[in-house]
Length: 263
Length: 181
Image 1: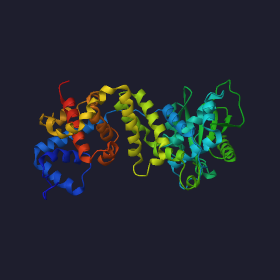
Image 2: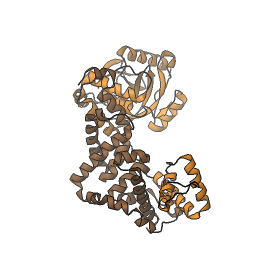
Image 3: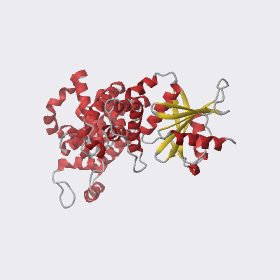
């Protein structure tokens, strides 16, 4: 289709080649030859500029995000209908593989419909936190701000949510701080910290304690097939949730409380 | 269905998580531009997800995004046939339309600087005004950023057809954006 000088044999192909160049679909040799022709031909240069201009306008198009509600709807589809093999440990730390294995874990633990029932259960907060944790495992990244540095995570949460729990990195105890996220629980936006323990993620959701909330020692709960621990300190009410084993989650809670005692 | 194969490979649910879920955004964009609104788009994509989950075994590797978007596109056309049959009128004559691809190219195109001034709302109107078979290509290429090869696979047409339709679609967008407003 091209002659030795890089020009198309058929002149009607020229606009298509220009377009392919704009789309990055040409190989290097053809691109080079075509770029030489463009340099020598103002009409071709004008057409190339039009492509660039149109691309600029496309970049202004807002791209609506996939809503959390919709993601949850689709995730529920995969859980409901068919039985599946037991989850295998993820060989590498891979978000997608993890998300998938968590789906299976959650399904085996609760059954697809049990999760739906759960949403109507009285403890709406726990269920909302569970589905938020689940969604975070499905998202491309479970965190909005990735940093193990509390001096990065805390100001980000302060700016985004208006408050932040103590963001301590517990990497020394095996719980690495991955970052933070703004979660929506019911109607409220709350800060969440995300920790990693081996291949599992732990989401720690914090909500400012109101005067009517009694101080409470950690209570083990479960929601949506995840292990959950709820407790309060003088400043915050906390929910820690994970697909990890209960003893590991309890260990995390102990470490976190010990590390934040002085705060 | 849970025999030895389930132990050696990922389960359907795992495959669904890896193949479909990462591409929901692209699926919604395509469905939104084919159905005309976000609400119907969510319903159509959900329908497509059910089909994808059921047919996940037929995904034989390659581009997961292209495979899933093919399912979404089919669901969109099924939805259009049921709800907006008039939008599909043009499809019957597509081959002839592609033959006379050069017809509109004689018309003068506006200056790049004029096009570049257009805002997002003007572009949205211009995209909405494209016939379905041109609009879907623009969405796949310019909004979702797919390559020609993937688009050709999704539409089951030769690459040359993708290129000529894309060229006509962009020509019309440029004239719309550069014309008097």
